[in-house]
Image 1 (cartoon, rainbow, N blue to C red):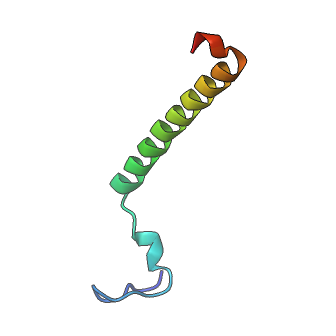
Image 2: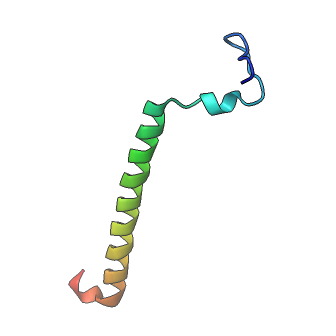
Image 3: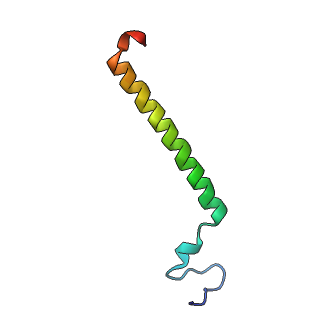
Length: 55
């Protein structure tokens, strides 16, 4: 394994260390919430197109 650069400097491959597992977990939760919102909005818009008199 290659040695890491001193703190404050970047080397090629250090981008993999940029996200901690906590940040990744938060991003996963945000993606799931965004997916749920997008699907709900899509369902609402399709329903409004099919039966506009109910809306």
